[in-house]
Length: 201
Ligand code: MN3
Image 1: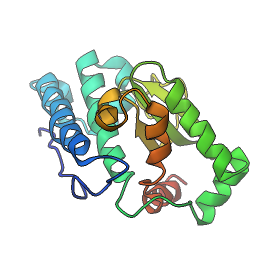
Image 2: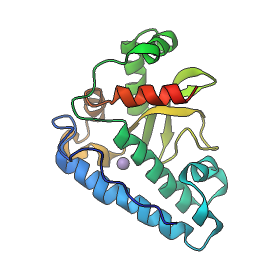
Image 3: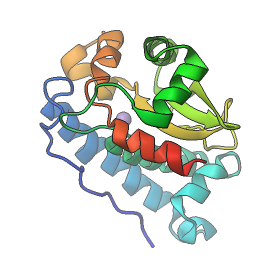
Image 4: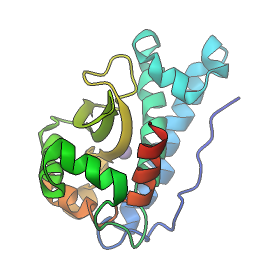
């Protein structure tokens, strides 16, 4: 079964003005599509053809670089689109808000730590909010790796992730990755993050 690219769960311009329509279109239709196509090519005719995407990323350390990079790319971007929404942002609520306060001290302290993880990831990669042993942590991964991978420096269950590859922000923010990370808070789908937190228990 070949993997397929799901359409974005909202219009290309839904995240304006924080993430521009042109970036969303190229990011989803070209970059994400390429990960899906290259993943399918890399698994064609191999035992991994029938492996689920979750199972592929979990064994990233023992699969080919092409499957690891493109499988990670497909997993990460699917997760990323769902992490954002139109008329979103604001502050987390309920048990998630409590867990954030307990792990980081405050929502602002968490945001600073998360933005820091994104800013300091050298080159291309991702910043994450994860659950690890029942506790929230911030981490980052290079390239298209993610915290589910057996090769991740910090392993855990992802709740929120932000793409810090230049293709995610360069058209609107150029070299100003910190500005993109600040703007990201306006599009975070906390309802979705909450659901992930609930199902991680
Ligand atoms: Mn990307």
